[in-house]
Length: 193
Image (cartoon, rainbow, N blue to C red; front, side, top):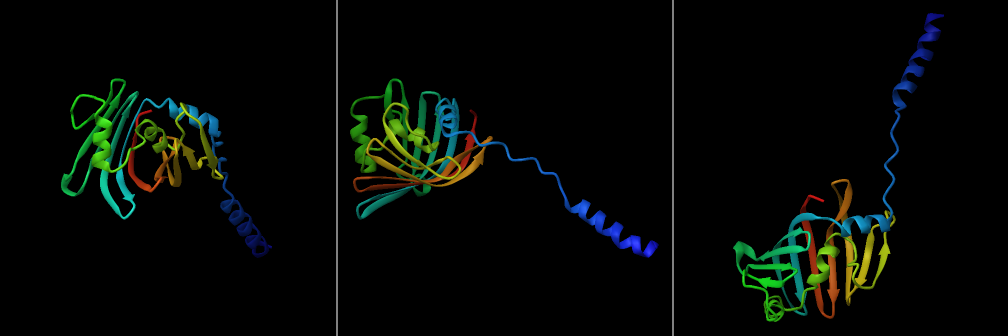
């Protein structure tokens, strides 16, 4: 009798051992709620790389972006810091390499980069959301995140997201407009939201 019970007891224990209670995943935030929260983000930083193609020409740079409320600071530098640019944007305007903000800065930025970067929108697009100040079109993936975004004449495609501070943020995105292609790869997010 003991021999007959032993296989039954072993199989019951094995079945109990293989059944685990797993908490269901937290419900994903809806698109509108995520957008509203990310638009209000107070501060964050990213480190990554940018590659720009302008017809047959192009360039690559390290990218360091710091956002603090209405103030943004972007550092672009080539290998060994060659061709470094520091752009600062705030309520007073845009400055380049420490010079005070002026109307001439935009043309200087265009001359150095080869195109007019979408600075008023870029800090939103890096977060995977549209700028609330102008119209846009968005297609979303099956996790309710931006897959493509069209705004201000630019088309932004999001290739990959990673978990950051309880949310997900882009790590690879491409921007394109009239012969300009910009590829951004984000290596590290520092989120202070």
